[in-house]
Amino acid sequence: MRNALLFCVAGLIGVLAIVLVTWNTAPPEAFRFWYWLVAIPALCIVSAALGYWVPNHAWRWGVAPLFGQWLWEVFASGSQIGAGNLGPFAHVIVFAMYALTAIPCVIAAEAAAYFGRKPALSF
Image (cartoon, rainbow, N blue to C red):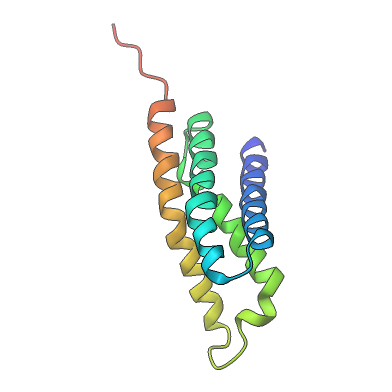
């Protein structure tokens, strides 16, 4: 139950990050700048903190914020994603974009989990 709640919280933090960046930037260039230089490092820090706190299956803490962002993108502008000749294939492209963006967060969570694991007692 605790892990599911933390997963939802991490997803909501991801949604909060993309909403704040979207509302504070107008041109697409500014969005990319703030997203990659502010939001992604902040999400990596959140993922690392969760990975340190709950080190079992730490990869999920890197995926959760970007999964939340993908869900937000689908529900907030879902009617615009699949428009045109691509149809539903565009949703797959957006999902792949967020999956690739999750790689730095997964690495941060796994690195923090490595240091968060308790060492085995040896006599």
